[in-house]
Length: 229
Ligand SMILES: CC(C)=CCC/C(C)=C/CC/C(C)=C/CC/C(C)=C/CC/C(C)=C/CC/C(C)=C/CC/C(C)=C/COP(=O)(O)OP(=O)(O)O
Ligand SMILES: O=P(O)(O)OC[C@@H](O)CO
Ligand SMILES: [Mg+2]
Image (cartoon, helix red, strand yellow):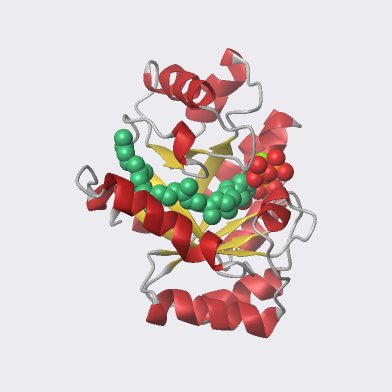
């Protein structure tokens, strides 16, 4: 948890997508604070294992598994991030799946390696939004979810998630104003340094995912953009 307080930038790699060795090296040498491996669908044990091995065999970089299915959890990561979808209309995505996972692994768990993330998903077109049957929150809902993440659930992370779409900086600003201790993660549609800078004005950490697979040079620029003040 303490290490996260220094972070500004994370690259999120989807184990269901192809990435060349050359691009993977560029990503790992970019100066990003951590690599997060995760996705909503087609996340397999083999896909996760292969990506982790490719990174860890060459790079001393923090590697996080963002768990979306228990079918694809392996040891060897520096930390395991567990989404809890606060704006899902089904309690299972917020509470029951996590409860089941803890019940199953309770005697093996090292709680210092587990980070629970309060997700608020704001893009109706995102796979994760549909998958978790989420309800589109307005800005006041987001403020209330941020408040709950910090003061009700005492979560280490509140994640404003626009996966696939560049979000509204005003929403991110309002969420940040509500938070003192819980870290604010922003992810969604960041495609260049300007986007990264704008969201980093409010978020503690920005996450860049899909653009790595579309325009690697622009995606890499997002690291420098948030590292220089
Ligand atoms: C051996 C070992 C180390 C054991 C430890 C095991 C462990 C980690 C135990 C933890 C116990 C526990 C609490 C388990 C529950 C885990 C679980 C299955 C949680 C459910 C998470 C959840 C709500 C998933 C729903 C989907 C979601 C919110 C995914 C987040 C990632 C995301 C939004 C990705 C973006 O989607 P993407 O697929 O990239 O979309 P595009 O393709 O459109 O870009
Ligand atoms: O893939 P993008 O749109 O960059 O979003 C990053 C991350 O928040 C997805 O979970
Ligand atoms: Mg993605």
